[in-house]
Length: 204
Image 1 (cartoon, one colour):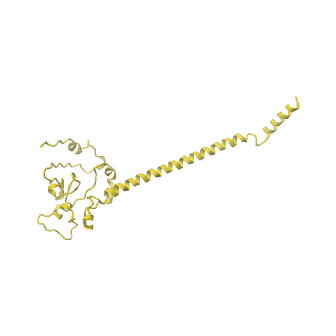
Image 2 (tube, rainbow, N blue to C red):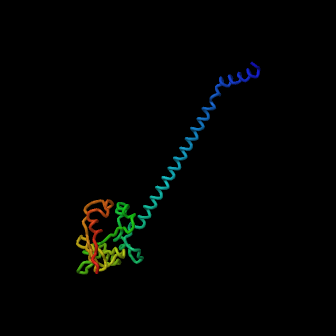
Image 3 (tube, helix red, strand yellow):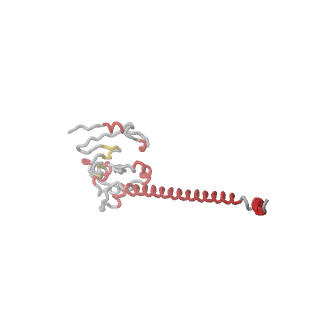
């Protein structure tokens, strides 16, 4: 064997015997693992950031609904006094309870005062009552058609004798007892709602 061949074989033997030989593969594997771990950590941070953004958006949406519907069941009127506003203010807990419903269009919460107290037949008004004297109908009746408090003759509902009454003229009022159930579970096929949805008013 030539000297150059011996030198080459000897060099290979020395490399194989060296502790550093073969570590190149280990170092490469370790670098790949570390890069994968860094990529995974980066992906987790991105996912956490997206989750925070989604949560913030949902919270903002909730705050917007609360701002629009919480404590407001009337059209803004600068002439209303603090007492008037308090008389028709909505309990924030009610708004939170029915938040899922309030996210749909044409929904809301309206607070009515008792006509027996605020609109007594003897025309006597108790000074100590919470009746909103500067609101039409003293907030005892409401019109869904105009979306505001109206006098009982032009309203769709009137709260009197602890009952809701369809008192308005030129209207057909139908009430359905849905029972003590979760309002969010109701649909067009639910008992009570189905009959109302199927009703066809007579043509005049």
